[in-house]
Length: 150
Length: 451
Image (cartoon, rainbow over all chains, first blue to last red; front, side):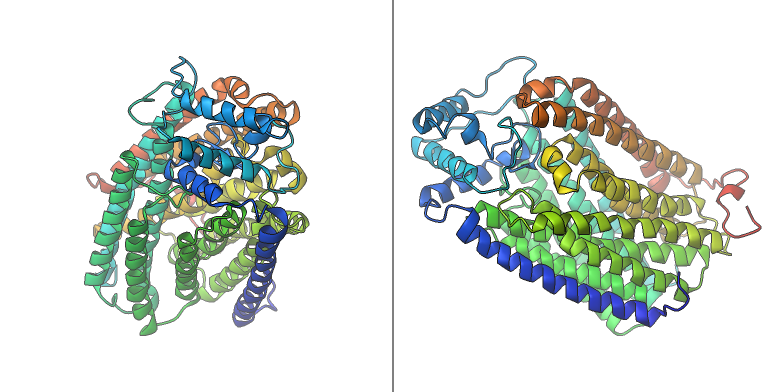
């Protein structure tokens, strides 16, 4: 440790530097917030139904098995791009029907396969959840993930 | 123990260790599901096991921080705790809130953002309890001696409380939600918790090595400076793929690479003070933890963090078992080992005996630390295979997981070894007192000319 550095100098550098980096970080976060709302996410597409879907996603704590945009539990497939994986970009109706059927088929009860619990969603809830997944897929996220596998 | 009110720490440590034991139980259950997918599938779905595992960790670490603060504050501030009664009440509130959350999870009562799953009213209770704690300890500090140790510690705790408030903000836009979610999660564990960690480590080193406070406190400011200068903008490594602007890719890559520095500095700090020290402290077990903590934190948080933090690497490894490997060793090295070290140091004094059961304690250290390292290696191998199959070759997630069973089996084995080590350690802390000083002991004797 440099002998030239005194304790009070080290303290002042710590407080001053931390404040500087915090303000810079806060400013960049504010810009990122603006960018997300106006540029990278679908502002008009963020409907009541998408919001309800996010609520259903949270209420059932899907995040503690699945991941969404790479964040979550890594125990079950990534769902940030599940809309793409189900062919939603080409055939939205088929993707919607496919996702709903898959969720309704749980639990599969297959031996040696991880089990997803049964969820008793109404048609409206199911649609909202899928709207949320479709909206999430549309976020401009620097082309992540690298493959449709998620 | 110079001050009577330091004993307030004891019930905090007891509750914390009980929750630590439970955390390991839920971890074992979840690890078993990875090996036998139908294990308890009807009784307890995986998401309940995982939320219990992670939340117990967070709650016991916070209780450990509180207990440690109550333990060291009288010595550092040179006065008794402002109000032991407030301490016991806020412990009761915190423990009740944690227990209520845990029981609630088993019945599906929770919110749904990772790590912040506590129901609203539990979050409110946690906030109230934490504010009571901050009031109590700040009042003690305000009337007492100010040192770099207690000032940095209190700054870390206050900032942890401030950033916690973002847990109450849940925007309906998922991208914005994630943006601020990291203001709690990252700014805690890779930001202000490092202030808590460095100051508690500094306290242990002052007590055990006898190195001059001026030297240790100067190091402390340098380390926490490095932590925040790198860690604040280092948050950018979480902003690569969530719809944030692309400038986070260079910013996050550069600053999160620099996040290795404070951890490396802590290793150099601990070992330098150890060798410079002239005091031959009788608590060898606590000294072992105080050296082991920065070492494992450097590997878990530093090296394993750096391994997947560059954006062009993270593009492929993000959200795979590589992340799980890093998460396990980082939390264990930085925060679990730190608190186990503080408890190893404080328990003999809280029980008013000479350092005791040290050999069992050290067995616990080596078994747990070795097993956590092994767990990290198995998950890293799993993650590398997963990254290649899924992210490069594009294989389906479930097919890839079937390829990883061998690693998950070894992870479960490592988890069982962690549990055995933890049992030894809890016995060493709370079991009958038998004075054991390691035979020889010079290998852990501080000071030049003593080794």
